[in-house]
Amino acid sequence: MFDPQEYTITIKKIVLDGETLFEATVTELPDVAEYGDHFEEVYKLAIDTIQTAMEKFAQNGQPFPPPLPRLEEDEYNGYIFLQLPNSLHREIAAVAQQEQMGVNEYVLFVLSQTGKRKNVPLVTKNYPMPSNRSETKLAVKSNRSKTQLGAVKP
Image (tube, rainbow, N blue to C red; front, side, top):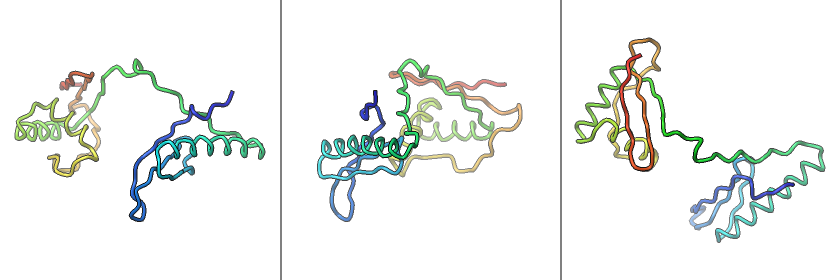
């Protein structure tokens, strides 16, 4: 049975032409955007738009995009494996030391601040993707209380 509430609806508060509004978008339907003065209003509009779009697709004999699968908490084990050039690893360690942080803490800080702050100290060079066996691999283990990052030589 079709349930429009299974679709991924994102609602943001935005300012458009000097007016504060709520915007609802549907990940599975990238052309859908609804606007309104209240959160609940745009949610209902998004649900109605999903339902209407599904009916139109069916009328035209077109397949309707299914909802994205829900990711379960246990699908994430807290590990991220990164392979970095040795020189980048060294520079990250140097910047972390300047910030009086450990490498683990600094990498987590930088990742968590992406898009939030403009004054996050970052490394200064562009590095090519690792291509040889002399590179450093970093293993990041994260959970709600702690993130660990360790270097592993291939």
